[in-house]
Length: 111
Image (cartoon, rainbow, N blue to C red; front, side, top):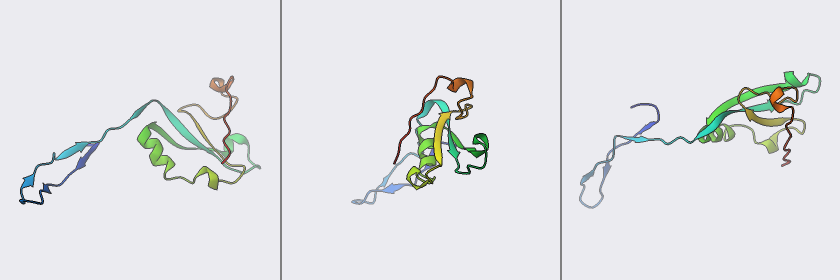
C-alpha cells in the first residue's frame, strides 16, 4: 500500500453469502491549491514587537490540508480580542514592510 491509498476489507452480500470483490485499495483524491499558503497567529503580548508576536502555524498546499488545520485549531471566536489569524502566500510574512505587501490591503472579519 502506498501513500494516498486506503486499505479495504472484503464485503459480503447479505442474501446468498456470496463474496463481493472490492478493490484492495481506494485512491484518495487531493485537491491541490495553485500555490502554498501559510496560516499565521499573532499573539496578544503588546510588550513584544510585532515580528516577535507573529508565529507561523502551518503551511498548506491542498484543500484537505487547510481543513485539517482549521478543524484542529482554536476557532477565531475563541481568541482574545487582540489576537489574530492571518493567511498569506507561503514565504510572505504578514507585515506591511514586506515588498509583496506594499500595495496590499486587509480584510477584517469580526465574529
